[in-house]
Length: 126
Image 1: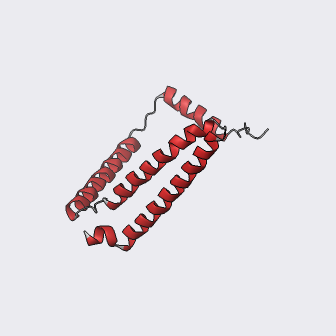
Image 2: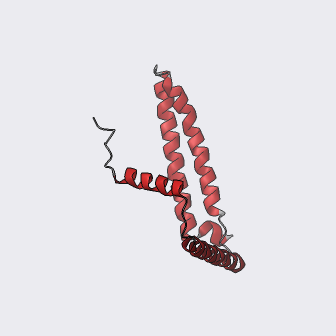
Image 3: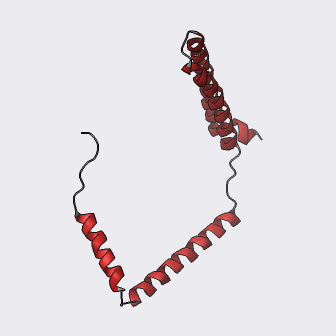
């Protein structure tokens, strides 16, 4: 338990949460003041800041309870990645052995290659 809540990483996460909560409280206080001052949109923001604070607490909880993968999980991941690489290599070999290409597909691929070579006009910043 000590390593989970009092390690250097955990203390940094605690500090970040404290700063986040202070910021959320101050922002909420400011928005409530603006709302009662006549800015009706600030009522919505006054509701959002406590939601952001709850989201911060949720993130804090998740960061503290992330479990390191076990050796078995790491081995299973490595085996899976090796299988995926082998299957991809087999698929590449099979694709390379297929010399015949559908003429319709070849025409479509040529069309896409031509479209990729045409310079594009910027549509923003006019």
